[in-house]
Length: 291
Image (cartoon, rainbow, N blue to C red):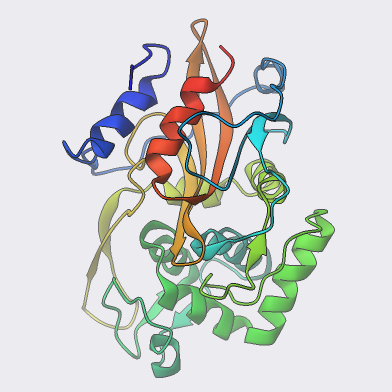
């Protein structure tokens, strides 16, 4: 793959894809860059819906931050979200619960599986910390615990009500984790959600740029080390996002990235569903973007 100097991000992704190594994580997350409406809207015109050669994804799209499509393919294909579901989980939690709300890890919560942070029964975390574990490690336990704390049926209902209110007509949520194949959406719907979250709850993306560190329960002297599973985390062009993987969904990714264009940076949303290699697909899509 020929690297383009205008697209700094591609070089990092290609290095990871080639097996040389994943971009080295940093000890702190970069500040989120804010842009004026003029910059957000000063993007090139959309391209026709033409598949980018070599992209393995079932569907993908590139949008500016106000939700306008720049380019894409199969953007209305309904597809399992996997852990991309957790973006809506975070939105409902922050919209309805105080950040210091205590979130308790229970035995029923642990039964969901995927406890990569090695959380223990009885540990209590403030919501702000639980969200960090959930978004950084794509942790299932904290996602489930947040919904359980709120009231599980009510939480799922709130997720679906929010999707409906945002006009996400092809989106359905069945759980807060993303394990169910009934957690489905489209590229177009998720672009709508990400655009909304960027304007209304940017904290979610701030959290997702955190690279690694220790988290501590409120009621014990323990600590747990967490590391961001997203290979883009730590790169200066990464402004936040979420990955998701299940056998049926394959590789999904949603990311907000910053790219230099004619010496002026502008951010954009990139979404990939059903990929066999999401980072390689992101690289190819960026290379095909209008200059």
